[in-house]
Image 1 (tube, rainbow, N blue to C red):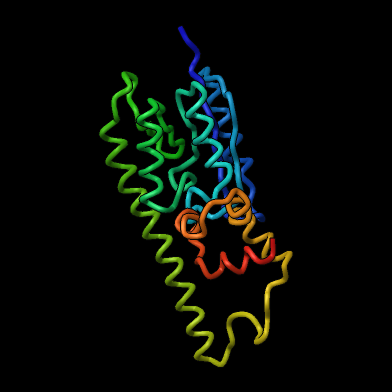
Image 2 (tube, rainbow, N blue to C red):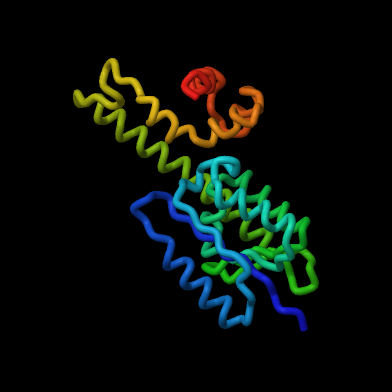
Length: 208
C-alpha cells in the first residue's frame, strides 16, 4: 500500500502571532494517520491578501504541480484565505490535481477516498469561505467606524502632512512588485496581479 504524501500549511496574520500550534497539531495528526509529510509551508501575512502576494502559498501551489502529493493539511479554512473567491479557486485547483484539503478544525476533507468531490465538505466549506469573507468586511467596517468616531472627536488619522516614504520603506513594502518589474512584466499586468495602482508602480520603477 502506497504511503499518503501530505503537505502542511500554516498561516498567521501578523508578525506578533505564532503558527507553531497549528504546525504542532497538524504534525501530530499526520503522525497518527501514518502520513508522510513531504513539505511544510508557513507564513505571517494577512489572509485577505491575494494569492500572488503570499509567497509561501504561491510556492505550495507551484510545488504540487511538479510533485506527487495526496493531501494538504490546514488548521482551518481561513488559514488558506479569507477571500472567498481565492479559497474556492485554490480548492478547485487542488481538486483538479487530485489533491484533498484536510481542515483540522472541522475534520473535513474536500475529496472522498475514491477521489470524488466530498459534497458535504463542498457545501460546508463554501459557507465557511463566505462567512470568513463577511467577517473580514465587518472588521474593516468596525475599523472605519472607529476612525470616523476618532475624527469626529478631534482626532487626526493618517500620516503627518508632508510625510513621504523613504526609498527603503518603498522597497520593503513593494518587494513583490519590484521583482516583477525587474522581470520585465508590464505595469498593467503587475497592477492586476498585485492590486497596486499603475501610478504607484511608476513611482516604484523610478527608485530601482
